[in-house]
Length: 297
Image (cartoon, rainbow, N blue to C red):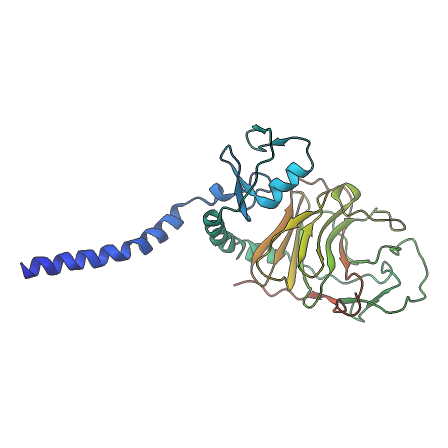
């Protein structure tokens, strides 16, 4: 009897350990495709569920509904007479975050092999901007410099382009944004209007992500889309696949995906785009720094 009881206790002990093992096995069997947002086709961020049972990123679904007169499910087209009140599915978010970190880490390692040496082009810089001698840093200056207003120079937009242009293949670079409260980063078409107002939309030739008011991250696919990030971004990775029509942004330090423009059509040269924005009474005086790429392990 004692031997039988001991064996039973042993079985119970092993049974107590099964949830951890089960969880590991389940995570390895669960397809990541089940966690993709049908709109951005990336792993769900702050997932919400429609009344018809489909899951989307909160920001993606909000963007779709904000630009439409009717609230439809983007997947099955079911129409909702009243705009549903969406709440974050916290359990699904934890599962998605696990896969996201795992995926972005296969992903960063892969795309970092396309790292290119980007330097800032002084001939395109707005007169208020100060560039370092090596062309790797840009800050907003207190006084405007007396520079020739050439066709290449951006004015009145306070920004600067990279010297290097790309019209095929893939390229990747990283920018340090530590200490800043506002910035704009991305890529632009070479034929943009450099002497007028620049509207941050792909239709106007700009694919950008912005930071405003210290912690408000937005992508600009049209009307700005609010991006919810768990941590303050210190280094932004920008990846472009020209033929695929893809522009993706990453938080390099936390190894997380920020936003992607997908299914774009590129026909012109693309240039890296940098705007350190205004100093904001010294609160945003830190420079944007093009950083060397240290490959993710």
